[in-house]
Length: 249
Image (cartoon, rainbow, N blue to C red):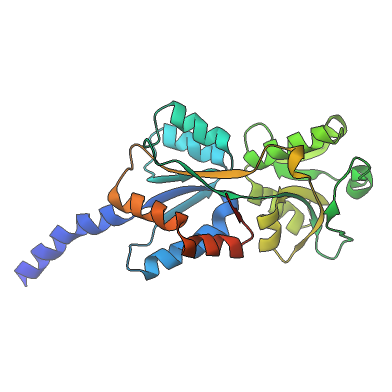
């Protein structure tokens, strides 16, 4: 019995070290959870998944938070960590793409058509309604939204009417609850919720490309982390991302 106890104690650190901690953009919540289940089904320890705005997670990594893998919803925050030598060299890879859409609560009139300069944002928001989106000061979804609205020439009119949120899922939630009559999120977020509908799609050239870089962190570079990143780049994981609406890079 004592020998079995000693062996169990010796194995505990090995099991703990095999778990991979993933810091990922909030828009990856559903897809990455799917992939994590697939990874675990292959006999690996369930990864620890932490979802938030890419900016928040990047600053946590900078502050020393224990993460093995970082997945951003834009290149800016991956660049931020790379410039500070906080990503393991040679591990960064752009894996996914997304679209930017305008959403309304389900049941409202929604055409899911391209958004042009004649789109009636004022009519959609009404006299007092606000437009929910990630905070354009630092959240990728909000930054893309600001770029798109500027390209349409409506930023000055709409900026005072934004309802900025800490991440894109916060914007989705405001529209789901009817607390905002409209919001700007990713197409994958809209697809994840039956409580919203797409009112329009922003042209891809109205904002920077929505690209998701994945990378191993310098402090969390382990064989298991590299194995998970390889799995994420593989066909099974890519098919899971596609089922959630992501496009391959």
